[in-house]
Length: 468
Picture 1 (cartoon, rainbow, N blue to C red):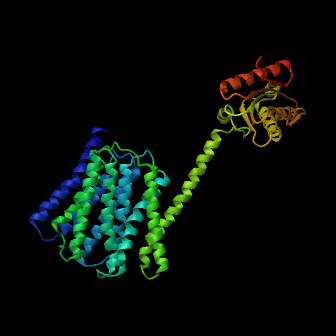
Picture 2: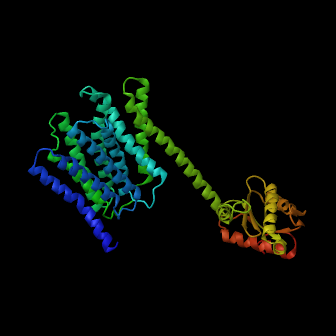
Picture 3: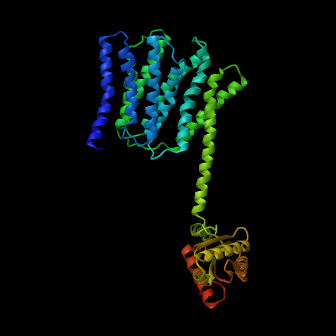
């Protein structure tokens, strides 16, 4: 980082704490609420903290940076609207404040998990796991507590739901942050992040408690705890983490628990339609929908992995198993009774040199088609490279001899290529494995020796004998 850039970052990091100190001094000197201190300065600190998080250079996961910066920004928007309404009683956007505060929790939770579980790049499954856990855990617990809460608190079901959602969100934030830090090395980032989340959540819980008991005073000095917490969270992103990734198993278990809880909510709603307000069922529906989306993506990724593995073990030209796949199967043959055949085409090089690789490839494809028709089910046919093929046959030696003769017979008549009819032959070396102590190197060496003997003598098929 250049000296100029370093000074810019330092100035930005100092700005929010400096304005926070100024705000605290003004509030101590002038306790009464004021538009400059409590509408402008108070919310400016939040927006500065959002900018600090967004510009953090040390964070390796940009999604973590965007999520935490976005969470602080959307909280600051809600705070600005709420403060504006407190001064002017205009109700400029009814419900928008609650929406902004509600979205703060999943965004912040996602950002924390990404910041503490550093990966070089995020994948769709990780993103969905985090969203499902954030949405499912907080909203589902709030829904389960809604019914008893409605018996004790006045207000609409929606307002009671949001009142429960906030403290649940605070508790979930602290619990998940603490659990992540317990399995991570302690660093400046983890400590700063935990202290920031803890201060923010305690301030929020205190505000909710005082509001419920009519003991809250607008523009109280304790409100600055929100800002202090957010500033510490933003500052934590400027420090190296040195952290480990969260295992897929942990993420999968957390996602499954969220899905089960959401399904429980919908089951209760189906059995007792009037038990929950319709609004509070939306998070449960969203959690289940995202879980099914995650399942679809997981299946897609599994298919891609299977396809990639298959391609890694398949010959590109002929579609046959390649040498890697053949050697794996050969290791199994070493422990069983069976026969190894090595096949080398006679005259293929002449065709390839005379007509070029395109014609050579045409010939290899036609040979492959004939070979595949000649081998029974359960017999492995592989292309080992160039014009060499390998066959693994389990069972008696007589059965393997029949397969070898059938393979020879497939090349007894011409191949029709774009340059006209072409004839080639095949030389086959055969070795019977009847000893469990054989090594695959011994099997290959003996089969190779027999194949070259078949080519040298023109016999076409030679079975390896101990005296060879």
